[in-house]
Image 1 (cartoon, rainbow, N blue to C red):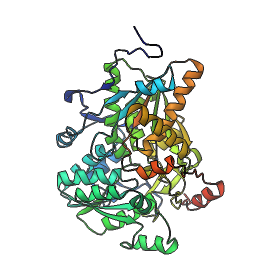
Image 2 (image 1 turned 30 degrees about the horizontal axis):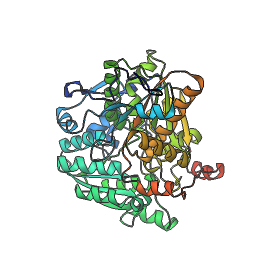
Image 3 (image 1 turned 60 degrees about the horizontal axis):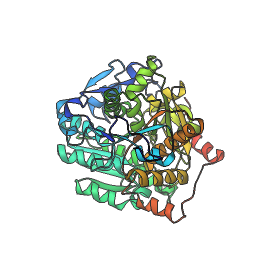
Length: 462
């Protein structure tokens, strides 16, 4: 007999693992089906579309080809990358039975958990691909930036596997908050430099103008770019924002779709955190492709920190991708490349801009964006950890917050919805943040309109 208060267990198991044979052999390219494609990159000097060859001076050549590919809906994953994926994929799709019980909701909640690898996040999916193509091109060195440290860790792991040198410019406040991330990156052979630093011209300029800054992803990008441009055997790689990164992360969504089809799970709502857009874009990719083509009516929600409200309060405009204004101009939702976010615990979500793909989709009304305060985020993280036994990353917890909110709405209305969220990684390197929440010292910061206006003043006149 079923005990009072217990939910009936359906045929869906607690953890859904695909077999190795079921792991996708192709990435999904949303751009191929988008009705309005993202606007082209512009050369900041001429304001004309940037040719591929110019971008290949900065990025790995094959990645540039993927960046400009807007016709192939499916792109084959090379065997050399699939070899790497076998170590960490597939990742599980988990039914949150215990969270459902705690909330007493009729909603079904699932989370795609990307934290089962040593990097602790989804970032390894693109890191492996980018380093593979760099090695194939004959490069020997890579530079990058990292915010919370997941991308730097993942890239260090991939560089160790494919035997390439790596220099990581880590946002200074994150380097202070997460010294153990630095230790892991160095264990895998990466060199970590807190940013802004005195090792580059742009870093010295930023420090001169703002000596007490905690840094930003925009600052770190500028430094990594400067170093890459000085060495023909080196290229810059990045873990979010760009179209090719979302392409690699689409393996998350492809695995999720296969699992849903296997167990007849029909999502009503799909939720992910958004900073630059890689994990959310990857999770929703095949589902969004179907929505664009009229095959579903899923409600997509991207969740960002209220301290860095790129989608909810930003402008859809051409902007630089970095503080030093070294990148091409990118049409995206942005707070301005001069925007310096508060040094809170939003981690990797503190980027001033947003993926061009997601920016265009949001502008066209294909998904909803919400901004949440960090105390509410950690409240949700704590509830989730106590129910599901996983300590979530602060970034992931933004998605958890809104998933809980949606499940509670179902409790109020009696409507039974199926909710899928992306759990991008673990929070074991974020214990300083959890300590701050637990002792009551955590505060919320929301920029004023006047503060945001200062960032908008840095937007180029296009």
